[in-house]
Length: 342
Image (cartoon, rainbow, N blue to C red):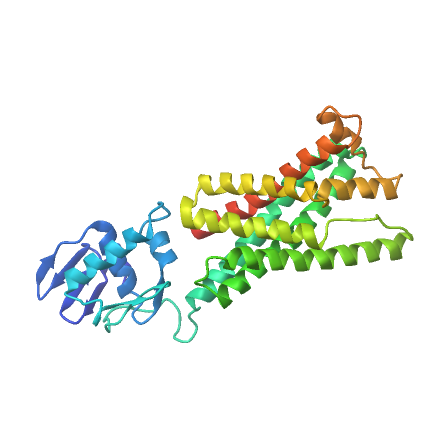
């Protein structure tokens, strides 16, 4: 049976997918297009939790709407089915998460074998971790190309080396932030502060681990190491910024370009705050490497010259810190925005 010819039956109702028709005892019931899609989504997954985000993705298809629009949709469906929210026969509310279709549906075939279905919260957590990690690829490529083009003197080979290094570090950082947010989401899915706290913890852990391993490795291999690199504090701040940007975008801005722009602004402010509070960003780390290894092909004074300074001094460092924070946070949020639209 193909989807276009599928008929779904429950209780005294019939859903004709081919003709987009709902009927009760042979009498048609009028439903708006989006409300019909919402009913089909529920009826195709009887007994399963259908989270709110899935309605937004599959019924409104990424169009920014408020939770009230979904509430009104469910209210209309209940009225059409003669259902009662206080003692539901067809549509039950799962507070703070979504809705569940209670009736047995004939013709609804599961997309996966019974027992293999991924829990909706687990699926969202997996998407969150994966999308955030992919965002790190974009951030690393953009940052690597920028610093490689401006600060590397060794031609294409030096640029590629810095590009690979920067991308690897960005992916590790983004991956840890994504895993932190995903773990926190699974632990407290209903909490508004899940994403910021999870992102901060993930960034803090990878920052501390990366700083320790990086300095120890350089010391073991070369006998010297930079005095300081990005670490626990900087990772925590970038993770917190990413979580806040995702929370703001989801709760207030409805996703899309506005969420990405807000993420860039939050990231830029975070980069500036890190510098003003004595922290180090990636440009500072490259400067430390240049100082520790004078024969390297890194020349950060060339970046400073772009800002009218004879070296990589205060203004250039602050400007680059803001740009780094903006690119990193916006890339991670953009990947999540795209991930929710698939």
